[in-house]
Length: 327
Image (cartoon, rainbow, N blue to C red; front, side, top):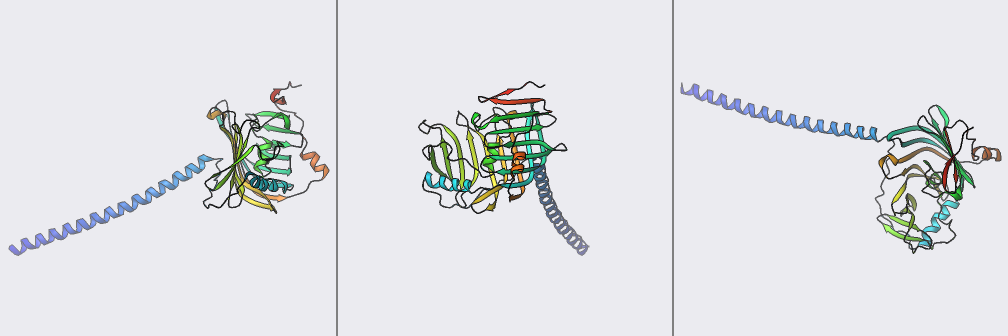
Protein backbone atom coordinates (compact mmCIF):
# COMPACT_ATOMS: atom_id res chain seq x y z
CA UNK A 1 0.00 0.00 0.00
CA UNK A 2 2.76 2.36 0.93
CA UNK A 3 4.72 1.54 -2.21
CA UNK A 4 1.62 2.17 -4.36
CA UNK A 5 1.26 5.62 -2.80
CA UNK A 6 4.90 6.39 -3.56
CA UNK A 7 4.39 5.26 -7.15
CA UNK A 8 1.36 7.52 -7.45
CA UNK A 9 3.33 10.41 -6.02
CA UNK A 10 6.19 9.70 -8.41
CA UNK A 11 3.69 9.49 -11.22
CA UNK A 12 2.21 12.84 -10.18
CA UNK A 13 5.67 14.38 -10.02
CA UNK A 14 6.53 13.08 -13.47
CA UNK A 15 3.21 14.33 -14.69
CA UNK A 16 3.88 17.77 -13.22
CA UNK A 17 7.36 17.81 -14.73
CA UNK A 18 5.83 16.86 -18.06
CA UNK A 19 3.24 19.59 -17.73
CA UNK A 20 5.90 22.16 -16.89
CA UNK A 21 8.03 21.03 -19.84
CA UNK A 22 4.97 21.26 -22.08
CA UNK A 23 4.09 24.64 -20.62
CA UNK A 24 7.63 25.94 -21.16
CA UNK A 25 7.66 24.50 -24.67
CA UNK A 26 4.28 26.00 -25.46
CA UNK A 27 5.38 29.34 -23.98
CA UNK A 28 8.57 29.27 -26.09
CA UNK A 29 6.59 28.34 -29.17
CA UNK A 30 4.16 31.17 -28.45
CA UNK A 31 7.04 33.62 -28.06
CA UNK A 32 8.51 32.52 -31.42
CA UNK A 33 5.11 32.92 -33.08
CA UNK A 34 4.71 36.34 -31.47
CA UNK A 35 8.13 37.47 -32.74
CA UNK A 36 7.37 36.15 -36.24
CA UNK A 37 3.96 37.85 -36.25
CA UNK A 38 5.57 41.09 -35.07
CA UNK A 39 8.11 40.93 -37.90
CA UNK A 40 5.38 40.16 -40.43
CA UNK A 41 3.29 43.08 -39.17
CA UNK A 42 6.28 45.43 -39.41
CA UNK A 43 7.00 44.24 -42.95
CA UNK A 44 3.35 44.72 -43.92
CA UNK A 45 3.34 48.19 -42.37
CA UNK A 46 6.51 48.98 -44.29
CA UNK A 47 4.87 47.96 -47.56
CA UNK A 48 1.81 50.03 -46.67
CA UNK A 49 3.99 53.08 -45.99
CA UNK A 50 5.86 52.58 -49.25
CA UNK A 51 2.60 52.15 -51.13
CA UNK A 52 1.00 55.21 -49.54
CA UNK A 53 4.10 57.34 -50.06
CA UNK A 54 3.53 57.18 -53.81
CA UNK A 55 5.79 59.97 -55.01
CA UNK A 56 8.30 59.45 -52.19
CA UNK A 57 11.87 59.02 -53.45
CA UNK A 58 14.35 57.78 -50.88
CA UNK A 59 17.06 60.42 -50.57
CA UNK A 60 20.19 58.91 -49.08
CA UNK A 61 21.78 60.83 -46.24
CA UNK A 62 25.58 61.01 -46.55
CA UNK A 63 27.35 59.62 -43.51
CA UNK A 64 31.00 60.32 -44.22
CA UNK A 65 32.39 63.75 -43.24
CA UNK A 66 35.14 65.37 -45.29
CA UNK A 67 36.87 68.76 -45.21
CA UNK A 68 34.99 71.44 -47.12
CA UNK A 69 36.10 74.59 -48.91
CA UNK A 70 37.69 77.44 -47.00
CA UNK A 71 36.19 80.45 -48.81
CA UNK A 72 33.09 81.54 -50.70
CA UNK A 73 35.16 82.14 -53.83
CA UNK A 74 36.58 78.62 -53.72
CA UNK A 75 33.14 77.05 -53.33
CA UNK A 76 31.51 79.17 -56.03
CA UNK A 77 34.37 78.41 -58.40
CA UNK A 78 33.67 74.68 -58.23
CA UNK A 79 29.93 75.14 -58.87
CA UNK A 80 30.54 77.55 -61.75
CA UNK A 81 33.04 75.17 -63.30
CA UNK A 82 30.51 72.32 -63.11
CA UNK A 83 27.76 74.44 -64.68
CA UNK A 84 30.07 75.63 -67.45
CA UNK A 85 30.99 72.00 -68.18
CA UNK A 86 27.35 71.12 -68.85
CA UNK A 87 26.68 69.58 -72.25
CA UNK A 88 23.48 68.99 -74.25
CA UNK A 89 21.75 65.89 -72.95
CA UNK A 90 18.72 63.68 -73.22
CA UNK A 91 17.15 61.84 -70.28
CA UNK A 92 14.31 59.36 -69.83
CA UNK A 93 12.60 58.24 -66.67
CA UNK A 94 9.54 58.25 -64.49
CA UNK A 95 7.86 61.26 -62.94
CA UNK A 96 5.38 61.69 -60.13
CA UNK A 97 3.36 64.88 -59.74
CA UNK A 98 1.46 65.52 -56.51
CA UNK A 99 -0.91 68.49 -56.29
CA UNK A 100 -4.20 69.69 -54.82
CA UNK A 101 -7.29 71.01 -56.58
CA UNK A 102 -10.12 72.42 -54.44
CA UNK A 103 -8.70 70.68 -51.37
CA UNK A 104 -8.52 67.25 -53.02
CA UNK A 105 -5.18 65.50 -53.38
CA UNK A 106 -4.19 64.25 -56.83
CA UNK A 107 -1.22 62.13 -57.86
CA UNK A 108 -0.03 61.44 -61.40
CA UNK A 109 2.68 58.90 -62.28
CA UNK A 110 3.92 59.02 -65.85
CA UNK A 111 6.94 58.45 -68.15
CA UNK A 112 8.96 61.54 -68.91
CA UNK A 113 11.49 62.62 -71.54
CA UNK A 114 13.85 65.56 -71.06
CA UNK A 115 16.06 67.41 -73.54
CA UNK A 116 18.50 70.05 -72.28
CA UNK A 117 20.74 72.44 -74.18
CA UNK A 118 22.66 74.50 -71.56
CA UNK A 119 22.45 77.01 -70.18
CA UNK A 120 18.79 77.94 -70.69
CA UNK A 121 17.09 75.59 -73.14
CA UNK A 122 14.99 72.73 -71.80
CA UNK A 123 12.07 70.63 -73.03
CA UNK A 124 10.23 68.18 -70.80
CA UNK A 125 7.40 65.99 -72.08
CA UNK A 126 5.23 63.90 -69.77
CA UNK A 127 3.07 61.07 -71.10
CA UNK A 128 -0.11 61.62 -69.07
CA UNK A 129 -3.56 60.13 -69.62
CA UNK A 130 -2.52 58.46 -72.89
CA UNK A 131 -1.23 61.78 -74.22
CA UNK A 132 2.56 61.76 -74.88
CA UNK A 133 2.51 65.56 -74.54
CA UNK A 134 0.06 65.72 -71.65
CA UNK A 135 2.58 67.87 -69.78
CA UNK A 136 5.05 70.06 -71.67
CA UNK A 137 7.55 72.29 -69.91
CA UNK A 138 10.10 74.31 -71.81
CA UNK A 139 12.31 77.35 -72.07
CA UNK A 140 14.87 79.07 -74.23
CA UNK A 141 17.17 82.03 -73.64
CA UNK A 142 14.31 84.55 -73.48
CA UNK A 143 11.10 82.83 -72.40
CA UNK A 144 9.53 79.81 -70.72
CA UNK A 145 6.23 77.94 -70.86
CA UNK A 146 4.22 75.21 -69.19
CA UNK A 147 1.30 73.31 -70.72
CA UNK A 148 -0.78 70.82 -68.69
CA UNK A 149 -3.62 68.74 -70.10
CA UNK A 150 -5.14 66.96 -67.12
CA UNK A 151 -8.75 66.31 -66.20
CA UNK A 152 -8.43 68.66 -63.20
CA UNK A 153 -6.06 71.15 -64.85
CA UNK A 154 -6.18 72.32 -68.46
CA UNK A 155 -3.91 75.35 -68.51
CA UNK A 156 -1.12 77.02 -70.44
CA UNK A 157 1.39 79.51 -68.99
CA UNK A 158 3.91 81.62 -70.88
CA UNK A 159 6.31 84.32 -69.71
CA UNK A 160 9.74 85.86 -70.01
CA UNK A 161 12.68 85.12 -67.73
CA UNK A 162 13.14 88.68 -66.52
CA UNK A 163 9.55 88.81 -65.26
CA UNK A 164 9.70 86.02 -62.68
CA UNK A 165 11.75 84.85 -59.71
CA UNK A 166 12.29 81.46 -58.08
CA UNK A 167 9.08 81.75 -56.04
CA UNK A 168 6.81 82.25 -59.00
CA UNK A 169 3.35 80.69 -58.74
CA UNK A 170 4.03 78.34 -61.64
CA UNK A 171 3.27 74.72 -60.67
CA UNK A 172 6.51 73.45 -62.25
CA UNK A 173 9.25 75.97 -62.96
CA UNK A 174 11.73 75.39 -65.81
CA UNK A 175 14.34 77.33 -63.82
CA UNK A 176 14.06 74.90 -60.90
CA UNK A 177 14.27 71.87 -63.18
CA UNK A 178 17.39 73.29 -64.86
CA UNK A 179 19.07 73.86 -61.51
CA UNK A 180 17.96 70.41 -60.39
CA UNK A 181 19.75 68.95 -63.43
CA UNK A 182 23.01 70.57 -62.34
CA UNK A 183 22.92 73.88 -64.24
CA UNK A 184 22.98 76.06 -61.13
CA UNK A 185 22.98 79.85 -61.39
CA UNK A 186 25.59 81.18 -58.97
CA UNK A 187 26.96 84.31 -60.65
CA UNK A 188 24.05 85.88 -62.49
CA UNK A 189 23.76 89.02 -60.34
CA UNK A 190 27.10 90.47 -61.50
CA UNK A 191 28.35 91.04 -57.95
CA UNK A 192 30.78 88.14 -57.75
CA UNK A 193 30.80 86.59 -54.30
CA UNK A 194 29.73 89.74 -52.41
CA UNK A 195 26.18 88.53 -51.82
CA UNK A 196 27.21 85.03 -50.77
CA UNK A 197 28.30 83.55 -47.46
CA UNK A 198 29.70 80.11 -46.61
CA UNK A 199 28.96 78.03 -43.55
CA UNK A 200 29.26 74.42 -42.43
CA UNK A 201 26.47 72.03 -41.44
CA UNK A 202 27.39 68.43 -40.64
CA UNK A 203 28.82 66.90 -43.86
CA UNK A 204 27.87 69.88 -46.03
CA UNK A 205 29.19 73.24 -47.12
CA UNK A 206 26.24 75.64 -47.20
CA UNK A 207 26.37 78.51 -49.68
CA UNK A 208 23.83 81.22 -48.88
CA UNK A 209 22.86 83.87 -51.39
CA UNK A 210 21.64 87.09 -49.78
CA UNK A 211 19.63 89.96 -51.15
CA UNK A 212 21.85 92.67 -52.61
CA UNK A 213 22.46 95.73 -50.46
CA UNK A 214 20.63 94.32 -47.45
CA UNK A 215 23.60 93.68 -45.17
CA UNK A 216 23.11 89.97 -45.84
CA UNK A 217 19.87 89.90 -43.87
CA UNK A 218 17.49 88.74 -46.59
CA UNK A 219 18.05 85.24 -47.97
CA UNK A 220 17.32 84.20 -51.56
CA UNK A 221 18.55 80.61 -51.48
CA UNK A 222 20.81 78.11 -49.75
CA UNK A 223 22.85 75.46 -51.56
CA UNK A 224 23.90 72.37 -49.59
CA UNK A 225 27.04 70.76 -51.07
CA UNK A 226 28.29 67.38 -49.87
CA UNK A 227 31.95 67.90 -48.99
CA UNK A 228 33.23 64.47 -50.07
CA UNK A 229 32.32 64.82 -53.76
CA UNK A 230 31.28 68.49 -53.78
CA UNK A 231 27.99 67.76 -55.51
CA UNK A 232 24.83 69.67 -54.59
CA UNK A 233 22.38 67.62 -52.52
CA UNK A 234 19.77 70.25 -51.67
CA UNK A 235 18.72 73.77 -52.65
CA UNK A 236 16.33 75.87 -50.55
CA UNK A 237 14.57 78.96 -51.94
CA UNK A 238 13.33 81.47 -49.37
CA UNK A 239 10.40 83.87 -49.24
CA UNK A 240 10.36 87.36 -47.69
CA UNK A 241 9.67 85.83 -44.28
CA UNK A 242 12.97 83.92 -44.44
CA UNK A 243 11.12 80.63 -44.75
CA UNK A 244 12.14 77.90 -47.19
CA UNK A 245 9.22 77.88 -49.61
CA UNK A 246 10.75 75.59 -52.24
CA UNK A 247 13.11 72.68 -51.56
CA UNK A 248 14.97 70.78 -54.28
CA UNK A 249 16.56 67.47 -53.21
CA UNK A 250 19.14 65.75 -55.42
CA UNK A 251 20.69 62.29 -55.26
CA UNK A 252 22.14 59.35 -57.23
CA UNK A 253 24.44 61.39 -59.43
CA UNK A 254 25.73 60.08 -62.75
CA UNK A 255 28.72 61.50 -64.58
CA UNK A 256 27.77 62.56 -68.11
CA UNK A 257 31.12 64.02 -69.14
CA UNK A 258 34.18 65.14 -67.22
CA UNK A 259 33.22 67.65 -64.50
CA UNK A 260 29.51 67.46 -65.31
CA UNK A 261 27.26 65.30 -63.16
CA UNK A 262 23.49 64.92 -63.32
CA UNK A 263 21.33 63.60 -60.44
CA UNK A 264 19.03 60.74 -61.42
CA UNK A 265 16.83 61.44 -58.40
CA UNK A 266 15.29 64.93 -58.27
CA UNK A 267 12.49 66.02 -55.96
CA UNK A 268 11.05 69.55 -56.06
CA UNK A 269 8.63 70.47 -53.27
CA UNK A 270 6.78 73.76 -53.18
CA UNK A 271 5.08 74.76 -49.93
CA UNK A 272 2.29 77.25 -49.27
CA UNK A 273 0.23 78.53 -46.39
CA UNK A 274 -1.65 75.24 -46.03
CA UNK A 275 -1.30 71.58 -46.98
CA UNK A 276 -3.60 72.19 -49.97
CA UNK A 277 -1.03 74.61 -51.39
CA UNK A 278 1.66 71.92 -51.53
CA UNK A 279 2.96 70.76 -54.90
CA UNK A 280 5.76 68.28 -55.47
CA UNK A 281 7.30 66.69 -58.52
CA UNK A 282 9.72 63.77 -58.37
CA UNK A 283 11.94 62.60 -61.21
CA UNK A 284 13.54 59.15 -61.26
CA UNK A 285 15.76 59.21 -64.33
CA UNK A 286 16.75 55.82 -65.72
CA UNK A 287 18.85 57.06 -68.63
CA UNK A 288 20.99 60.21 -68.89
CA UNK A 289 23.17 60.64 -71.98
CA UNK A 290 24.98 63.47 -73.73
CA UNK A 291 23.39 64.48 -77.03
CA UNK A 292 23.51 67.08 -79.78
CA UNK A 293 20.74 69.01 -81.49
CA UNK A 294 20.43 70.29 -85.04
CA UNK A 295 18.95 73.72 -85.72
CA UNK A 296 15.72 72.05 -86.77
CA UNK A 297 15.57 70.03 -83.55
CA UNK A 298 16.27 73.09 -81.41
CA UNK A 299 13.53 75.07 -83.13
CA UNK A 300 11.09 72.25 -82.48
CA UNK A 301 12.07 71.42 -78.89
CA UNK A 302 12.87 74.85 -77.51
CA UNK A 303 10.11 76.98 -79.06
CA UNK A 304 6.85 77.37 -77.18
CA UNK A 305 3.83 75.47 -78.57
CA UNK A 306 0.65 77.26 -79.57
CA UNK A 307 -1.83 77.64 -76.66
CA UNK A 308 -4.67 75.77 -78.36
CA UNK A 309 -7.24 73.52 -76.73
CA UNK A 310 -6.73 74.72 -73.14
CA UNK A 311 -9.45 75.92 -70.78
CA UNK A 312 -7.16 78.59 -69.34
CA UNK A 313 -4.29 80.52 -70.93
CA UNK A 314 -2.09 82.79 -68.80
CA UNK A 315 0.57 85.29 -69.83
CA UNK A 316 2.98 86.84 -67.35
CA UNK A 317 2.79 90.65 -67.37
CA UNK A 318 5.09 92.54 -64.99
CA UNK A 319 5.32 89.54 -62.70
CA UNK A 320 1.58 88.80 -62.62
CA UNK A 321 -0.27 85.99 -64.38
CA UNK A 322 -3.05 87.46 -66.50
CA UNK A 323 -5.62 85.10 -67.99
CA UNK A 324 -6.24 85.64 -71.69
CA UNK A 325 -9.63 85.54 -73.36
CA UNK A 326 -10.22 82.50 -75.55
CA UNK A 327 -11.42 82.90 -79.13
